[in-house]
Image (cartoon, rainbow, N blue to C red; front, side):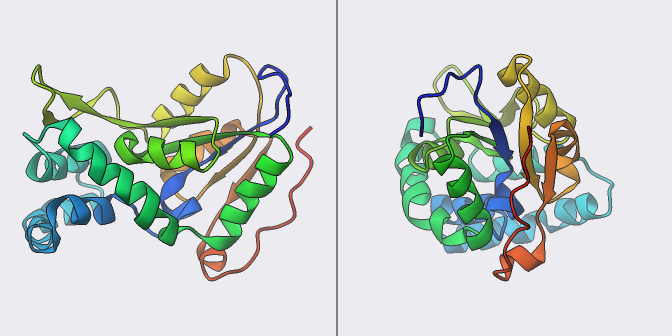
Length: 217
């Protein structure tokens, strides 16, 4: 990383699930947090809500809160931090998409500011991103009760779609977003902010390189 001022750096935003990684990360995290038998029971119990989401009958944030309440509700956040740290160090790196991760490293080598903008949980995304050299993480956060236990609800809005763009604009404070990488409708508004928007798809997850990095001046 060079010594460029934060106010003159070129900023690049990466989505996590399906962009930097080949798969959604939260199911893998919940499997580690719950153990395989309880995780499989959670999946079976949640099939109606997951199906309703796929059919457009249930919002992303509503499904997420249902799943979180059933899986992590009532657990102390501090008890989950070691699980999150282990997941970020050992499991998440195995889910990375080689060509997209290589592009992130190329941006970093050029001194660009890296921002992870994800609808997944900051509980583990922040830990991974800090170790991976990102300058900031914008993620979905968990609501806690007065005892520090997870309620199953989200603290603030789900970091998805327009909320990604709103929070990213707040972070940039009027600075330009030079590049953005995403893979789904939840990234559309963020991609629309960038001078160069890059859609990531199955070819990259099969090892095909991204197009050459264009100059986003």
